[in-house]
Length: 174
Image (tube, rainbow, N blue to C red):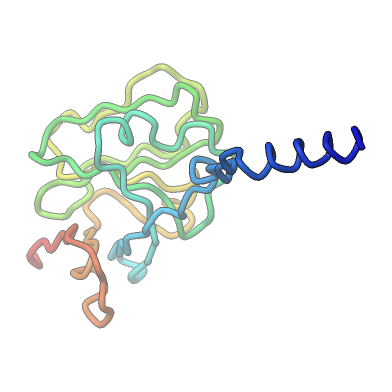
């Protein structure tokens, strides 16, 4: 009889206790970043990239740090609003990058190819820019991208596509 009473009491206690909340895994699951189309027009033709955008100061400070690879048609765009003289370094960046500093008219003001991983030496165009685009090291040379080439992004880069972004950069043609 004592066993039945003990089991009954334990059963009632379990039934009356509050249910445990399901674990919150939302911090572990991160949505893939929205990608923005970027098109660079060179003497050899147009080249499209689908890039992440670093808008906030925190995103811009982190950039592509700790990435072990970067695909041939991906990268990261750092818009400068308002345009300013931007300076980047490679501290905690594991892979070489090509850095393209883009003027407000859409032309590439300065291209630093194959930046050295972990370097603390700043890289800058020395002039105000509308954005900096980082690509996998060596891609600019492989595609013939050079200073003076023209860059557009968002809906302006691919007017035939519906691009859901307010980040459109539409420099006028020369």
